[in-house]
Image 1 (cartoon, rainbow, N blue to C red):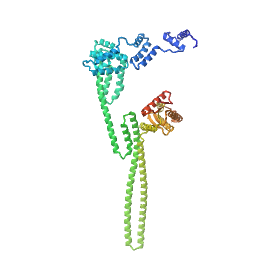
Image 2: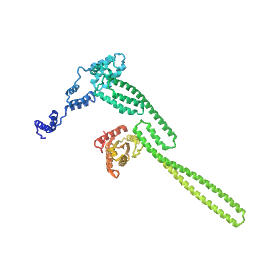
Image 3: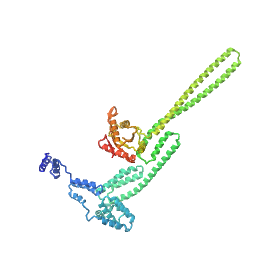
Image 4: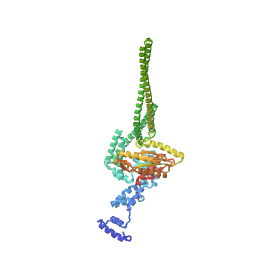
Length: 589
């Protein structure tokens, strides 16, 4: 566009453009083309007003409704509706109750005794109105005025006082009282439809799924859902309300029973674990497992902690089972060696007894003979028996020596296996896949490092990292490749970190790194170095290079912050790093 074009030139050019585009020369189309040629952008006043109303609607619901209705009316060129919506922004007219009158009547009526309505019920009704309509002063004044009017008439139940109708609604209700109750339609307003949909969705997706283990309540909730979907008249809604009251009472009773059942099961598990500890005093390999269960049941239940404990226990039980089997085999071998030793000792004793008998026999023969030739024969037999006895003794000595070595080897193997089993029980705080700390080990590391930081008055930072596009990697290469990628990441990160740093698997593809004696700026430097190391070390999948990157958020601990608070700040920084383009490290606020 030429810089010296006049408004007339731009208008002429806009008309030509509309003709070329075969677009109707309506005011809106002309304005759009005119702005396009002039290089300016003018915003529709209705949109500006709707945006301001939306911001004001955070405090006053009436403005939120206008923000939704006003642009729609303008888009449909429904100017009477636009004027009607705009008039609602004007100060309240004479028909609206003034606050001075409302407060005066409310105070006066609170001191008046009415049949069936006590002072306590009045206070409860006022409190309910303040909670429901306190965000909008005008609506609140109307509701309080209607509440006072209902007390004066004495005809409104206390359950419905919090929803006292406005004057217009009261007039409408009065007109409709002449019609039968079954034919009185519910007001088809947007708000009513939204509330109805929310009720149906709450029943369908939030409540029924939670009651699958309570068949009777699940059946009743399904009946309520069907009744809510079919409610069309005021009488239907009233009947639905009565059904809900009965249902909530049963649900409350069931919740109490479920809580007591939960507590009793926990108490039973505590007794079982304590009894196991008493029964297995000599089996130290069980101490790690009982300690893990005792630690879990001593804290509030957390599903992630239970999943983590289940995974650790399964891996621990598998490894201990293998070692326990080998330990039992080694003990059986030792028993067999002892039995063989006793048998050989018995054989040696028996052989020695036979040899003494032979010696006595040879002694008798020598004493009874005078023939030199016969004596030589006797001596030859004696030498052969002595040589045989010597060989038996030598063989028994060798067997005893070998048995002694076998026993020593068996004892050594038993001791080694026992140490491995005890070590497995001690390292039940490790993640079975990556070898890093699991959530339980991470909690202990947090407590240890935070206490050390406080004692030494040194800073400490926490980093949370998450593999970029991990779901895509799983979907493309398979879950086995995803697990291998996690192991590769953990190995590279361990190598790149300092010896004092602590690496733990937080869950899925997320890891936590505790950086002692490190402020936030230095922690970012450390994590950036880890990123470079990961970029240098490609992940190999079927001999093909796969580049893995991660995003990270870093937070330095502030005064007396808990681990949960520091991790929450690091998680928020990680979220910002993800949305800033990934493969980067950002600091927490």
